[in-house]
Amino acid sequence: MNSVEKRPFREIWRDYWPEVLFGFVLALVVVTSTWFSQFIPDKLFDDVITPAMMVATVTVAFFGAAVVFIHSHGYKTRILWGVALVVWGLSDFIYLIGSIVAPAQVMDMSAEQLTMYEVLLGNLLGWVLTLYPTETLRPGWLNWKVVLWQLIPLCALVALDYFLPYNLMPIVALYPYLLLAMVLSHIRAYRIWCEENYSSMDDISVEWIIRYCIMFFIIGANYIYILSGHGHARGFTQQWFVVFMLAYSTEQILYRKNPWANIADQADAVAKDEQVPNGEQQNEDNSLILRRWMLEKKPYLSPDFNLMDLQAVLPMNRTYLSQLIHAEYDCSFYQFVTRYRIEEAQRLMRENPDMKVTDIAARSGFSSPGMFSRIFLRETGFSPKEWALKHNKK
Image (cartoon, rainbow, N blue to C red):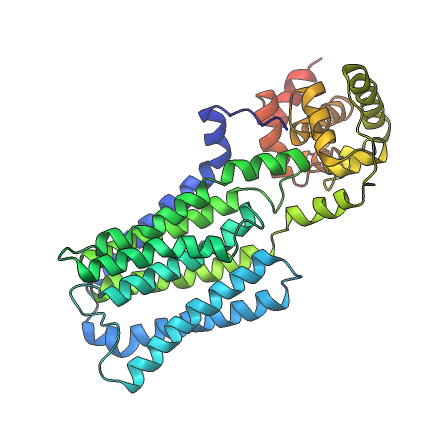
């Protein structure tokens, strides 16, 4: 299968600047919180704030896990996120109970530095947070063997720190970033796969995963900051940000679709003895059939139109359909459908100069006016209003 060409930086920035802004604002809030919280008395932290934050974390984690499991619909991604919530909730619940029944806390927020136990626990919790995005971007890749290979280096570093006369905790604390880099390495392949199979990126686009990775990065950065000098202020900032990430992520994950399941189910419906045509002449014939069908039936007007819907006129497997689009149109399925939708929108604007952008977006197959405006600007260089003014002048 041909891959989607790399996009220029300007186009990437245009698509992802909201995620960059999201990360910048969160980082600024975390830094401000860390600075402000240092003026709060230590006794208030010990007696009120720390227990309250722990209760909040446990509540969000367990409640979120229950909701996710109830509405998992068999999606492995949601199940893994539910497991992550349970693990995080249990770790904070054990700490909360321990701080109540035992005077000597396992984790002392007033200590000058973290213990190796805290560093190890932090790494394990960080690893748990990578389960969801890994399965989302590359389903089926994560198994017990992969998990073992991911945890062996961490165990080895902890053992070396114990036996060697050197402090390896800073290196151990960086290990979650290695896992994050592994997650990020799958993003481009996921985006390409989605564009090869879907005509709309609603609830399956890669932007949410990028936001998730940004939050993961901020938690890791603050974790390393805590490692350099423990204290109530730093621990407080980390705790409320974890609560935010768990709550925000749970809400987002519940509204995300599983793009792999629908296409896989449709692909399984294709007969195993199906003959896949070969040759340039056959490609041209299929291309003509497809073009005629697109113009007459206009299936692209449905936001849910996907690659396997082409089997209505070309009963071929997914790989061949994708190769046909690339060979004849030199683009992905997503780009192929977008061209038809843009042409439909332009036709509507020419024939109905007074039609609202909202109506144009809905009648040309776009899922929302915002999505229509962004794609129209990217494809034509004009906003819908600018294009209409330019082409409707008398």
